[in-house]
Image (cartoon, rainbow over all chains, first blue to last red; front, side):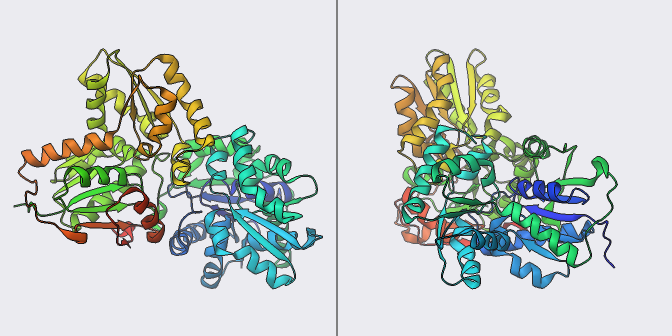
Length: 273
Length: 273
């Protein structure tokens, strides 16, 4: 018997997954969350399938030790590379960010041309195109890796001429192709959403998989009778953050994303799991 | 009895240390090299002392298994954080990149004002300033972290208006202070040496610790009677490259830095050491 009061496990290579955690907090304020960010081995985006899967397995074992009721793979690269393996190996309900993003993009597109931006890993895997085509064959999907976006976001250059210039270089070919829908296929990208939106123009719909994932998660928990219906205030104790390195730096960045007050983040040695 | 024919072990968080390996190849063509790049956990520059030291210990154990005669810590962050611990734990002669760079900067400066650029880890540790002041108290040392340089170099933007713009932002305060010597305190930076040199101006001497380290290493091996004096051609077999991930990508980048032909790079699981 799984406890409806048990926390939801959310993990990412580092900080980006906090945009997913933030959406879960907004849409399901009654839920507890255990977040893990792999800050000792971040980033995942330019690493191989084997390595990302090995790292993800360790994290799932850690989250299981925390008695979570479900796991959200809040990292596009890990969703692309590891989710299928993890699902087949684990009994817990599990959800990545790719399928919810793909479904929302299909609903949004009018002209059948969808763009996806993400890390080298996510784009190279072709996973968004694969899921989208499985759901709707006639849609055209164009992927573009944007490897400098993550360091620019982590340097705080969310609104900056340099980020504008780099974004223009990455996005021009998507504009030329005439996409009408763009998936922000990396959890860092919602933080430069306004830069990307300005360059793409108002006619292009931006899809934020973080938002869609939280929505899907709520439905899944509901269906499995795992949603926490107790409306009592849970207090500061409901969110727990773990990292594999640099807890203080994580806390600083996290507090700039999440307004619920992250009291502390604990360091664990993830290689032991 | 150590074999003079044994290889020199060189390690880095990833690709940057290849600029050090390249200098060793140039200055000591008779030497064999075993290089390890920790591409599964790269970068080290924004990670903590504890984590960088733990990773470095695993790598030293791996290099010992390869029967190296000496170890070069070809990473400024690992030299800053881990070298002292590693030296006290290991019998092998060991050398980092920081001291050779510090010594060369002291020799170069005329006005006693030295700048250091590097990762957050290297600059935050204050290690260059500490070594320089130990050797010459009257020198003023100013450090500046340049966290975007590594991703820009790895994206291949060695000569690019964006790299120029970011470099100007980072370097302006060093120009204003009037330094006459600048240490390139990260092994990636020699690859954007001309950009940095153009912005700093001709009067500022750039110190490349990779070059200085190879020079120091040669003297150390000579003194310990470990230098390989056999002048016979060693062939392609003399350089061996190991990484913890993405061997193919490493090979591509490595071949753009080193002209000796990197035939292959092997993947190992460094967490097992």
